[in-house]
Length: 191
View (cartoon, rainbow, N blue to C red):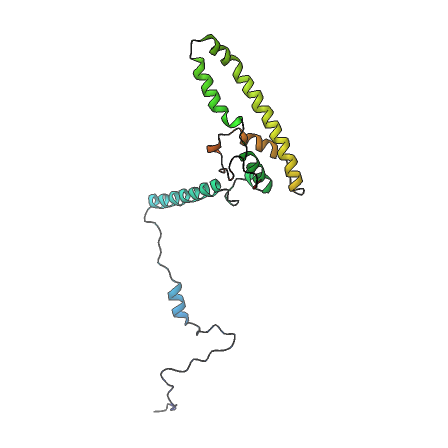
């Protein structure tokens, strides 16, 4: 009765797109809050919560293990990170080393020690120290070589400890090295 009469607005007003606008109308607060509301997915019991945490941690460890095996920089341990360490890994992995066969040789020596042949017993006596001297000398040569190469290629990087890193990697069985070897034996282009 006392209302002012206004002309009714059309049912579908034409959409006016402002230049530089987002191209859609701002949602009402009620709609935005409804869309942002998420159901609570808290675990029902403490056991279930611990189980979920353990599963998530196991997944994270599996991803880190795969990343480390591939040589992904973000998953590597601190001792393996950096271009100098990658150079050292590729330098060692591109060579056949006596150190990588050391465990196999020691196992063969143990088997030889069980034989009742005097020559085999004499070999068992002198072979282990000789092998260790050869592996030590090889480690020194690898260490000097990688330090020289790293100083040439990366003059601004720190090469501290890279020689020992390369020597220790050379003593590991190739299949068990982590990160996995990225180069084949004899391959020179990635070094």
